[in-house]
Image (cartoon, rainbow, N blue to C red; front, side, top):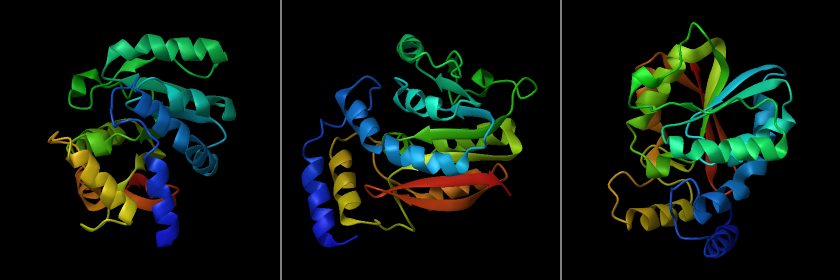
Length: 226
């Protein structure tokens, strides 16, 4: 990406709301609308024609309700640790008449007792979107452990967001974004390194299979069984 494009990207980012990870915040809505088409395009290449997909940290349901009508033969399972967002997810499902979205379930990645029973359901895909810049890297351990338990043999985990790579920023705009979110003073906020996510996944028998470049200096990291 040229520095001219980078500069234009950074100017456009000034139009966004202040960073706020609360699921119903204007920032989350802005970020979701900004990246949803790129994620959809990638998922059209990744998801099977028929199967089951689990979203972790669904939040207000923006991504899952956008994806669902494009994959009528995929059953989407929303989840979150914050049950306060469940009514919002259900309302959006009803408004769109998305019959392939299940009722949301409680999954707290730090509390394995909240995780689904593998004897009842396995998944072709588990995905999580835009949480690692405002979540501790230890959450990667929970995602990997969940995947090791719930993925079908050929299933994958897809993690979307901005990341550092081998301790370095991949673009000037990501460096500026990292400075901005770290300035908030919240200990867990900041871009995480792909290698740290990869290390946590390896503890649970999962390996980084592909690293896909997406617009706005984001990645999709694809993990599968080693």
